[in-house]
Length: 95
Length: 481
Image (cartoon, rainbow over all chains, first blue to last red; front, side, top):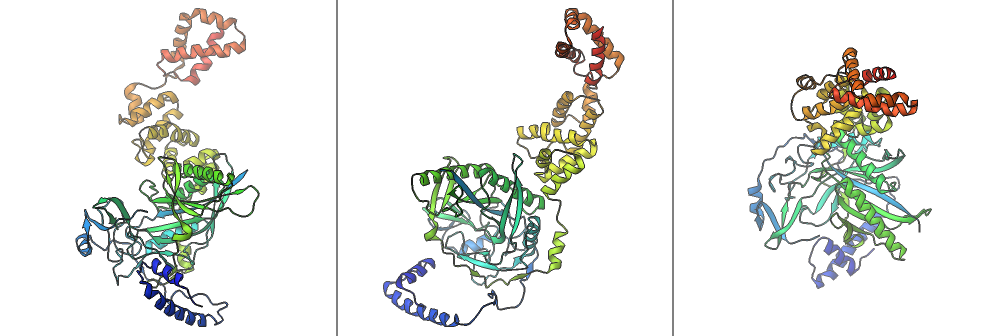
């Protein structure tokens, strides 16, 4: 199985990665070879095998429903490139 | 063309946990921006989620209340998309193995017809943050307080066939989650939001038409109006020979229209996969059964009991059981007065009228259930009549005291002393000799109508305090002469 250039561009867009035109060929090749390996694995007969969601045979640990965290807004906002009125500022988005 | 409407609903209910789904930050509406966030909610590298036990219990409880299969092994999955109010770049949700599987609800409409609405699934997921598009130097402000707030998304089958049915279904879900205490039901604050999937097909056609999805409708009234508007829009397009585009739309209540948000075919490619940060949740039968044992009486069960135990009509029983607060109020009133029909009439009538006037919820009523019960007990034992009782209720509402205190202070006790009533009637008959003559010469049918005049005079003379059940037979006898 291989993918074409359009697929590469679509995947890059979904991951919000800016891809230079010359990079597309390279990714097309390396992604295709990964898919070839996956293709090989798909020849294994998996009839009746439940998909595995986690290799650890354990159950999720649960947390008591208590508030354990304090307000650390000042620290968090200090990490942000821009903030105002307690808000993180990001380039304008309109849905 | 005769169209059939096909509707499926996704209802997001915010669970009433104290802390978030995957972190120990507080959950709450209206806090200062970004004061209820943690490294986990902000999606900081290396911060790992830990699942909230209480959210699990609430989800299982809901599952039991809709007769659903509980997912004994359920798995969190990542739903990947980019938006600034989702800093991780994915929403932790559930896909192939939800916590609640197939269930159903029987929904009764106002006209008494009942239909069974299938529920495909209900899954746990985290909410996103909030984007504020006001002008911050041309930028968007992000508040992540709501991020990782636990939601239970309840997905129905496309079994709903009308706007009315959709509203009845949402009301029923609302009533169940508030009965269970797993959601505060406050739609204005977004604790319950509804996505409406809607399509039309020619009546009799098996295949579904292309659907649109109306996002985030947050009141019963808007759900109904949004559906009517969208049905009309789709029917217009189809009847003109057009084609419906599968897309997400937004309902604008001010213009009463839906408009396109984005085309679903293109934008949404969520690339779900099992979340490697969270292990599967494996439940034991003992745990699941243990939660079942703690289920409170549900609205439909309460409505049935009100009919069998209190002999209420189906309508009264449904109205009273629709909210837990109202049902409790009714039962507490009835405990005092021991007359279910009387209690039901007053809770649904006079009391509801006063509550509506001041836009109060029944749990905030200035007259509590036992106080209303004491008032109704005075109606039942004929101390006062219904008309006087309304005035007394108003005085109680204004904080003038208990029913007995007000009746005493204002001298409202009914006159039941037959001697006193006879004397009063005699005075009235003497003063209205002409009317008495007319009455006596009239035939029986006419008399029945004419007696009202004399009853009115007696009530006026007694300032409403004469007991009608005592007055009527005496008056009839004395008029005969």
